[in-house]
Length: 351
Image 1 (cartoon, helix red, strand yellow):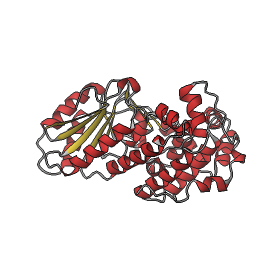
Image 2 (cartoon, helix red, strand yellow; image 1 turned 45 degrees about the vertical axis):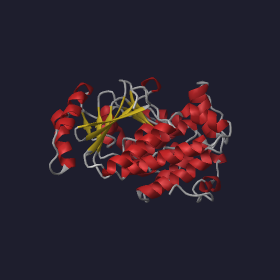
Image 3 (cartoon, one colour; image 1 turned 180 degrees about the vertical axis):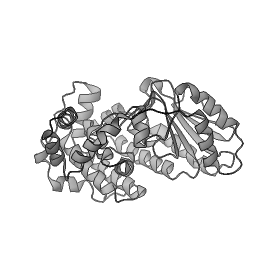
Image 4 (cartoon, rainbow, N blue to C red; image 1 turned 30 degrees about the horizontal axis):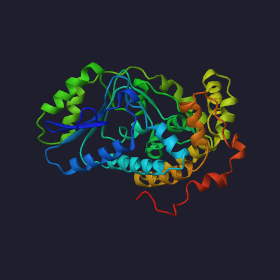
């Protein structure tokens, strides 16, 4: 495969190496990258010489900042079916990673958002560096925290997942480890040595445990997590029974965190917020595959709507940061409208 390819594959020792290779685009995922990675993982599942998979991003800025949102916007606005195929194949890839039978090591060095979370957080081994910056910012562009967010967000401590899903708040290294997005911290300068050690290792028994031991040799303390101090307030406010109730609770609290968070929520798509709230409450009771089926139902309706395109225009295309949501107010989004996003698909489910 050419070094200019969007995604690179290599076998070093017993490790299958994957490099997301669009550094100028912050390694954002294209449809072709999703298809290529899915096919390679399917091949490596049964290849005896590959004991584990390691995925990383090219460059120093990002592991993967999400999906190729500009192409999704352009194709969807013109009435094309690219968004449908992209999301279907991306979600199938997320599912393959979740069920991958061998260790799957994600080096989350730099920005990891949206689609990048989907190709890392479901893996068995997740490494943060000092450059890690995590977020699920979809509510700000009229979408919802997908790529398996339905499953992993409600399973974070307390109401942290609901907070992250509704606000799109960013987590740095220590917070990412505290939350469980990553499991260990390794300084970025040590990643080449870790890769060399993994490639040189002769696996003889419990592959996952042997990888744990190798990672531990390079791991360091990520330090105190600021989000830990905020978690009691997050749990108090975001345990409420609806988005309006969450905002009301925040507005009734005069501290800086509550005020800032309430103001932030009021800038998001009302439809996306109500959809995300329902998504995560349902996801807490579903297994992974059912969560992905639910997301595919939801995204099929989102790409036929207006807020996704308006939010992407305001944040990514024109960058005026002034989306005109429709509906514009939470009380204009009915429960029946939200329920419709979760209905079975007449033209076929994800699987």
